[in-house]
Image (tube, rainbow, N blue to C red; front, side, top):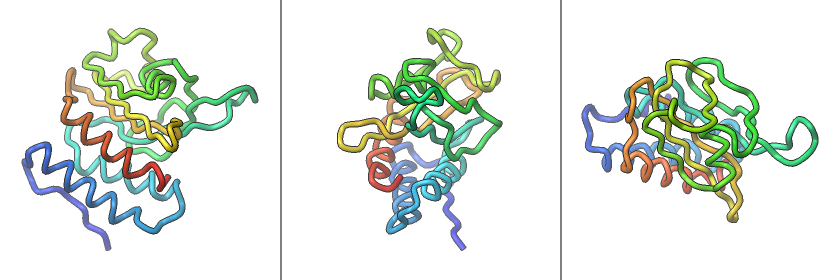
Length: 166
């Protein structure tokens, strides 16, 4: 049985070091990307306080058959939007630009998609493989300005670890 839990009240740098170690251990040698995303979503939920949603959106062919869009992947939290066009909302902005989105107030973000009205802040980090976005890691919190630059760096390191595992 796996029991990955952080020690209480760790400094951010150490918390993310432990999160990366746990994610590395759980995903090493496992070729199924969905299984790896599911376990990492659960780890995010365990390790990071004050979240109301943690998970993945995968890049997939658009339902219309033209281009690509984000499609809901494994997550922990309330039911979520299934498809998000590139450039729409915080997740779509991260996917379209290939850059981390650290949003202190989602209600002030142009085009924000409110999948859960309780969300107040959001951190979205693209997962890149060979320079192309293959997924995004999405974290939502009911607390405004919940996420910091340290959180962004920690989740970016996680995205780098997962690039060949999802």
